[in-house]
Amino acid sequence: MRELFNLPDVGEGLTEAEIVTWRVQPGDTVAVNDVIVEIETAKAAVELPSPWAGTVQELLAEPGVTLTVGTPIIAIDTAGGAASSPEQSPAEGSADGGAKIGEAGKDGRIATLVGYGPRQGSAKRRPRRGAAPEGGPLPPVAGAPAVPAGDPVAPDTPAATAPAQPAGAVQGGAAQEGAAEVPHDGGSRGTPDAGPTAGAVPLAPPPVRMLARELGVDLRTITGSGPHGRITRDDVQAASSGAASSGAASPGVAAGAASGVDGTGAGAAAPANGAGAPAPVRPAGSGDRREPIRGVRRATAAAMVSSAFTAPHVTEFLSVDVTETMALRERLKASRAFAGVKLTPLAFVAKAVCLAAARTPAVNASWDERAGEIVYYERVQLGIAAATPRGLVVPKIRDADRLGLRDLAEGLSTLTDTARAGKTAPADLVGGTFTISNVGVLGVDTGTPILNPGEAAILAVGSIKQAPWVVDGELAVRTVCQLALSFDHRVVDGAEGSQFLADVGALLEDPGIALTW
Image 1 (tube, rainbow, N blue to C red):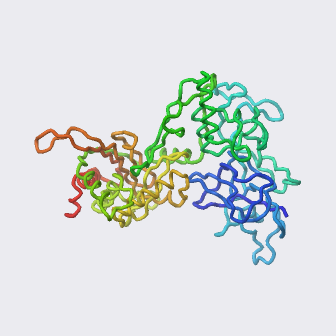
Image 2 (tube, rainbow, N blue to C red; image 1 turned 90 degrees about the vertical axis):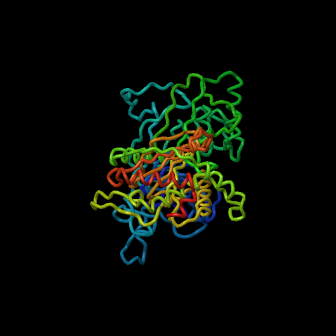
Image 3 (tube, rainbow, N blue to C red; image 1 turned 180 degrees about the horizontal axis):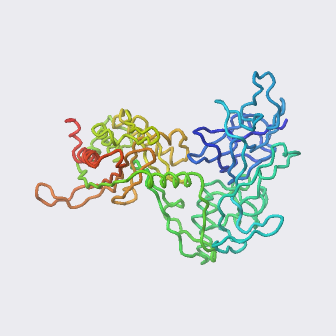
C-alpha cells in the first residue's frame, strides 16, 4: 500500500525545513529506521528515518525546496496494512476523532506527539532567474544584473511562496505540482545512468556541491564515478585540475572563515580542497556568483542584527602574558591524569571564564524586557562559536562551571568533532548564557564580537604568540594573547565588565591565583 511520509516537527518550535539530500531513490528498498533524507532547519541538519519498511515509490520534493511541517515528502509502497494519506478520515476509535500522528486534522493542523503543530503550509522555492510562467515571460527585476543563459552559477532570486496542491492530488505515482518542483539548477532531475546534460540536476552530496562552488566547477559537466552516478570529491577536484591545466583558470575567490573551533579547541573554516590543491578557478565569463540566504546563515544574520540593534554593546580589551599557562599545559599533557585528553589553550580560557563569572554574576545573566527583570543564571551554559560548512553555530557545554579542566577539555573535543560533522543537535544550540569566540585560531589578534541574543557577554580570544614583554623592568620574549570582552551595558556596568576581564586575564597569567579565590 502507498504510504505518504510527511515532514515531521523536529522540535524547537521550527515550522519549516529544507530538503538537503535524499539518501534513497525510487525503487530502493528501505527498512524501518533507515535514514531516507537529510533536512536542514534554521538551527541544524537532521537525518530523518523511515517509519515503514517497503519500496520507495516517489520522492515528492527536490533538494533545495523549503517545506512546512506536515507536507508529504516521500511515498513508500509497504508490504501490507491500511493505506494512509493526509486526506484520510480521523482515526477510528479515537475519543475526539483527532488525526493520526504526523497527519492533518479537520482544521488542517498537524498532529504531533505533544499536541498539534502548524497548519499545512506551502512549499517555498527560490524561482530560477529567467524562468517564465506558462502565461509568458517574467518581467525584469529592477536593478537585477543580467545573467547569460546556461550560466553554471546563475544566481537565484529571493524566496517566493506558491500555494501547495492538496496531498490528495498525488495520484498514480505522479508528484503534485509545487511539491516536486523544477530544480533551481534548471531542467528536471537526471537519472543515475544518464550522462551529464545541460539541465539535469547532478547527484552529489552537499559537501561536494560546496567544493564545486569554491572551485568554480559546473557539476553538470561531470560524470560521477560514485554509486548510481553520484559525483564525488575526487571527480570535482579532477575536473578543477583539468580546467586549470587547460588554461581556463580565472582569478580565484578568497575563502573566508568565521571564528570557531579547530584542533586547539576552536574550529575554523578551511579550504575544502585541502593543502596543496590547485587554486580555486571559475569558468571564463561566469561573472559574479550569488548564493541564496538560507538555513543557518539566515538564522545567524537575523540573530546578529537583532543583537546589534537591541543591546548597547561595550567592548574592552586586555593583553595577557600567558607564558605560565602554556607551561602548565605542557606539564599536564605529559601527566598520567591527562593521558589521551586533547588539552587545548581554549580549555584553560573556558575554566578561567567559569571561575571569573562566579565573582561577577552579571556577565552570566540576561535582560528580560517583557518581564522587566534581569535573570542571573545559577549555572554557566558555555557556548563555543564554531565555523561549520553550513555557517556559524554556537553549540553549548552544559553546566560548564561544574566541570574540571579535564572534563572541559573532553567536552570541547566532542563539541568540535560534532560541529565539524554537522551533527550538532538543535537542543545543543539553544539556552546559552555566555559565549567564547576563538578568533586567534585564524591568526587574528583581537576583535569586537557581537553578543548572542539573550546573553550579556561574549569573550573573543586572540592568537597566542611570542612577543616582546616587560618583566621586572627588563624586556623579554613572552607568550602573549589578547582578550576582547563585549557586554550588554544594560546588564553589566563598566566596572563589572572590567573586573571580569581582569580576573580572566589574571588566571591566564598565573593559574595558581585560583587557589586564593
